[in-house]
Image (tube, rainbow over all chains, first blue to last red; front, top):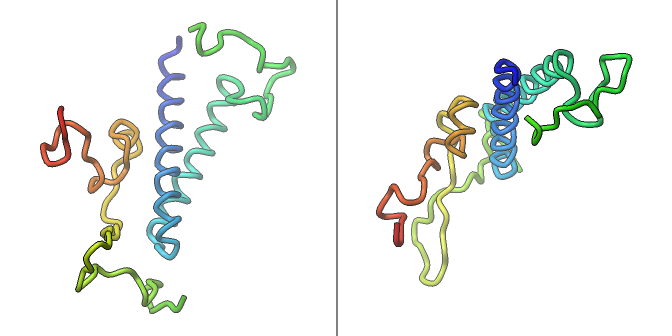
Length: 82
Length: 64
């Protein structure tokens, strides 16, 4: 499997994890401006990376936009077929 | 919730000065620095102050 593809997915997972952690922190520290700023930049980064991934490799989930004239979601390989 | 100039509430939790018997207290977390996303995902937390894997710190380990 394409190594760049795996690296990009790992970057998405990392950005999402940071956003989840900062979200939990903000639940108990809702006034923390610095955390809000870091949270927003993680979320925007994740969005940007996901958009890039979906344009290059196909949908991440079934609600992803389809950038082809055939339906990409059902195409192999699935994660367990790699 | 009334805020001062730094947008920190005036009732921001402070450590208990006179801890009462049979009451449990949890120190309040203050944001310091955070790990990069890659390190955070690997360590399982983005907060260095919470990065205490079980089995490494004897104070925090029962039988490891």
